[in-house]
Each structure stands twice: as C-alpha cells, then as structure tokens.
Image (cartoon, rainbow, N blue to C red):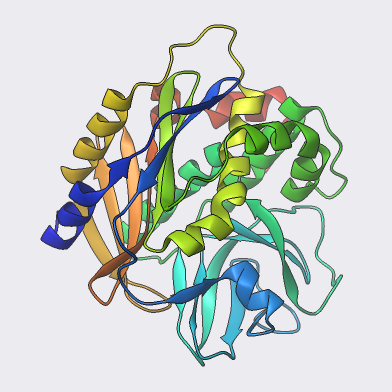
Length: 326
C-alpha cells in the first residue's frame, strides 16, 4: 500500500462507541482538514452550482452527465442516490467533479420499473445505498476495473438486492424504487439517527451490526462529513433494521483498531478517476475497499467486511425464492 495511504490510516483516531439497538458506531476522527476544499452533492445542488441529467434525450442506464458550474469542486459519494429524470440512480464510485467541469459518471439503476421522465434534472434523494447492496456493488466495480471494463456494477444483482431489501422490509414499491423503502421506514431509521449524533470534529464512522464490523467511511473534511453523517447512518441502519438479532456482543474498540490495521496490509491497484484524482481499489481477505486520492490527499475512503455467504454469492437462493427470471 502506498505510503500516502498508510500514513493516512495511521493518523485516524477512534472515538467512543455509540450504540442503538443492534448497531454500534465508532466515530473516526482525522486531525486537521487536509487537502482541497469541496462541496457535497446536496450543497452544490442547493446552491444551483451543479446539474445532473441523463446523458442524452434517450438516456443510458449506466451513465449520467454532470456539469459543475461553480468555482469549487463537488464531491459525489459512492452510493449516493439521485432521483428523477428517467429513473433513479446511485454512484458506482466516489467522484470529485472539478470547478467548471463537465463529465459523464458511472451509475447503477435503483428503480427497475420506470424508464420515463419525471423531471429533466436529478435531485438528491437524501439516501446512500443500502449498505449490503453497496458493498456488493463495490466488489463488482473492483472486479470490472481489473477486467478493464470500467466502473460498472452488476446491474441485475443491484436490482436483486433492492428487491430483497423491499421484501424483508415488507413494504410496497410499485416501480421497485429503493427510495420508496427508505421513505416508508423513515420513523424506524430516525431512531438510529437520533441515538447516534455527530460528534465535534468527526470525519467518519466504523459500523458494527450485531457485534461485527460491516464497514467504515471517512472523509478528509469534517464539514463535508457532517453533511453526510445522517445519510451514511441511514444506509447502515437499514441493514441493521432488517437483520436484528436478539443477542449480540458489544462492539469493541480493539476490533476497530484491528480492522484499520488489516486495511493497511491490503493489496491495491489505482485507476484514473472520471473526475479529479485517482481511484484506488483494495482487496484483502474478507475485505474490499476504495479511496479517492487527489493532490496527495485521501478525499474519501470506504472499506467493507465481506461475510462468508457473500464471498461465495448468496443471491441465487433469493432468486429462486422469488421466482427470479432473467
């Protein structure tokens, strides 16, 4: 692993454990606000500095067009959802869109049953993709980058995970929209958000569900993380909500430290980002991750723990249970 990233990992500090039901959070802090400044997706859209549209009138499922009209870079986070236009989508990787920059970004569809305009431009849904689906998407994007086919996911599996989530949540989603499930579970998800507040200087979180680490996210700037804290919490809380166990071990700080140390020994490859900087991809036993690096700074890093069932692929059973047909 490059020295820049190992030094970054070594500087991460751990806060005290916060717990709600079966989910535990260890706040991640990084001294100082290093690297370039940027706005989040929500901030840029609210200021009118960013527009996100279909790539053409006819559209293309795995791509969207982004135009940054402002004078500051804009961070689009892996898994953030955009709603509207011909169908809802999520980011396949984290992208830093430079000032006055136009680019085409790689996305996955999160609304299988619609392909018609509801608006000309996309809006922020205030949702980051359901954590389980996000980590599986990350695995497929990494594999496709290695195979030199770009930042593509396995779209069929994305839809399967969303349908599995909908069924487990026992809610209706007429067009198969992931966002419908989040909206109908708002009250339950808010309980997690209210119980796990942002702490001063927080840059990220490491998440335990049922006593075991499922993943972590950390950003270079605490102000940006503050804007994304509730979004990320909802992503992980949805998984916790749908996988509640009656008994589980209390999250341990020691396990969080071990996870960070294991990340530092990961194998890595880097690829040119579709925005600014480089997209690093990491693989280690039972783990997969990514980091966006620009101007010698780690802008965003996300790592996920892969369960034994996910290593071998657990969607075939779900497909047969719901009468899956390709």
